[in-house]
Length: 140
Image (tube, rainbow, N blue to C red; front, side, top):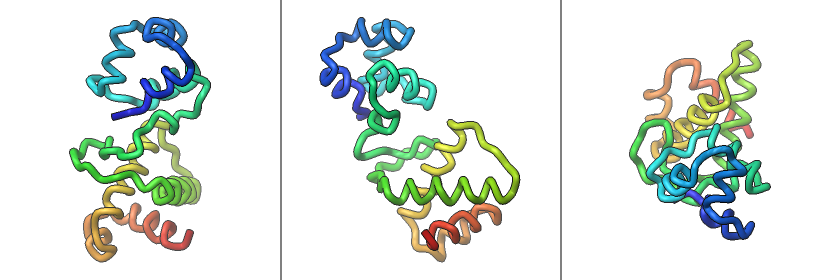
């Protein structure tokens, strides 16, 4: 489960006040807190601003892959940071850009792939351009 309720309580806010600050309805906040609505990058940005915290503070300590997989892998934050840095370097070298949400989803998907499989299996499953990212991660 995400940590929205925890941060809302830390700040002493009601569901209604958080909804007002994040320009949404109390119903949407309740759904986000219960995990009935997906916590997208847009929601994370709006809520983090309203709660005066970082977006990543809203992520659970155990994060299921948000790129469509239903795995229950614990999120290795350091591995995810390395994935993000390597992905950023790779995109820069290739002259490519990804929207923020797509970047986050790609980094998490790579995290889950690498965290859950031996290196030899990862290399077989990845598209050629992503193999470079995995090589970059191993150098971090």
